Image 1 (cartoon, rainbow, N blue to C red):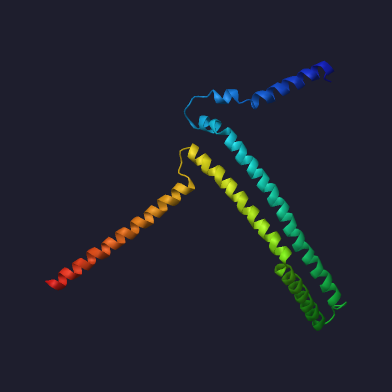
Image 2 (image 1 turned 90 degrees about the vertical axis):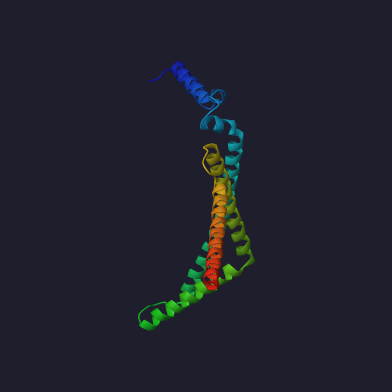
Length: 189
């Protein structure tokens, strides 16, 4: 069993270790080369990026809950209407066919009404927008990390791909031009 005074000492020691772990002064005294210095130099920018990502993820969760709430309500209505419309006993092949038709009609009506409603459009638009915001925030963090690690970022790779396509087009045009001149030279001789 731990004595109360000893427990206080352990608590103080743990608090001190946590403070040391999150203390930035030691991190900022690192050599001025390498990725750790670059990461620590942009620490506040990273913190802001992660706060933004967190906010975007909370918004995404909220919008996703709204979306699934609407879908779930439409599903529940469709099931209820299927039960109301379907035959009580399924003894014949015709009963099964009537149940199938009632089910198809109920689900089709309810989900068509859902998908054509202005409320669904608004909720889906918010959901899609928040998904794009999360993707954009994550992409920003990844680009910053690639830049810090001296790796090509996505925007730099996109620029290189555009240059390669342009070079291919130029080479293809030059080949056609040379072939046309060679054809004209053969015709002239």
